[in-house]
Image (cartoon, rainbow, N blue to C red):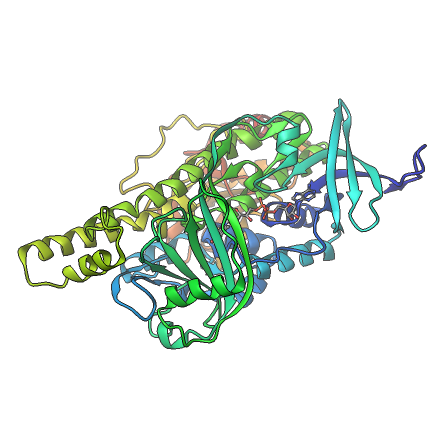
Length: 590
Ligand SMILES: Cc1cc2nc3c(=O)[nH]c(=O)nc-3n(C[C@H](O)[C@H](O)[C@H](O)COP(=O)(O)OP(=O)(O)OC[C@H]3O[C@@H](n4cnc5c(N)ncnc54)[C@H](O)[C@@H]3O)c2cc1C
């Protein structure tokens, strides 16, 4: 809807939701809002999407979200597959001594089943330069109005909306966009978060890193040990940076990004192309390889998170709220998950089917996750320390001493044997960075949009960071199992989602399904009910749902549009419609 020019002769626009930023958070919000049919607009500072590859590891939860939003196939088609992601190498250079290897991102045969069983979607590696155009392209095709070259300047809130002043960076023209709600997804230096005074804990710029994006055919050094990350231990690789030097695959095996640290307390280094080529040659360990530098940039490692994501009608998400190093590959993933969490809530509130207070559940649910991932990513940097220690490098500043100590581990001496054991343990610790399946999939929400069923939170039987524990405990992500429909396999995640609430029950719980249709009509909400069992629309192909649902066949599991469990009932009740009305009224703040 476009209104006439205002008194100052400026263009004056209105929209339901104004999204500021088109990165993973803003793009994810635009995609989810456009899929849900929410009228909105996106402004973004630059003329197009990300121009450097930055985020790449795209975890199963995020691919599941893309599946629900209908872009999973496009993302997987342009990403590098799970099978090429896992031989993570630690070495003195690509051509040099291989110190050790860790199978990562669930590619170890002993972990593969955990990943395959947990989700209908595989993880993949898709650099931000490839992902953002897919997300933004689909959002635009579904109705997002996207204004590139448009910069956020300031905002002013009143009880009914927000006036956002923006600047067209091509013409310099400034104008106001009036929105009912604003999403600040403007990244780690968020002006929106600062302007609405979000409270933060932690520190920025703890260490310095440089990215060098380059083109070089490195097949001879990598195609027999395919991975997305090659960690390089050389003199200086413990200064700044993210734990060690890294050569990161952008496209197999000729586009790359090197990450190298610098001392943030010194003036920022000037990285000329010659210097960048020198660093790349050092990391590769072969200065005869032709290298073309695409770009260089400097950035700071942060350890900072917002403790509140909402200020009135303004919501922040993504790096605007959680700022941390790329360790664990959680930044873009968490940003997209923030967007997915908020989008359905805005849709329900704007349609008038939920009360405003539903929006308070956004930061109740997402702020603890933001804190968790900021601390996790920073801890992963510290956990490089034991590798340096095992190799006796903590007091070895001289390159020659360093090289000798690394070689010492190959000796046939009791000291070297002990060193080898220590090194293996140190490398095992890196599972918390590279195989943290529990961190990726195990998010459990506690908020007003989740109704407890009176049972205690299930115990973790394995390490909660490394292993995902499926449960239908209210607040948890719906467990994935394969159901059957017309003989074909369908995930529980395909049955849920699509912007709707979903109730799952068994044949002896049919009264829940009948009640759900009645309650959906009364509340005017999208609520679908599915009876799972033989002769019904969905059957429990492998009896996996019976094992996963944690309620009786006559019980039910009520799932929110974002595939988190809203509530569950262990068995049948006398008045299922009254019970569902009570629960949904609480979840939807009505
Ligand atoms: C080397 C590196 C590797 C990484 N690897 C991973 C990984 O493997 N997996 C992972 O999940 N994450 C990874 N990350 C982190 C990831 O890149 C970020 O967490 C993610 O980009 C955050 O998304 P965002 O949308 O919040 O912010 P950004 O991507 O920073 O996007 C901010 C958006 O806001 C816009 N903007 C900024 N200011 C304004 C303004 N004033 N007005 C209008 N628009 C504005 C920008 O144009 C941009 O579109 C990595 C980061 C780095 C540096």
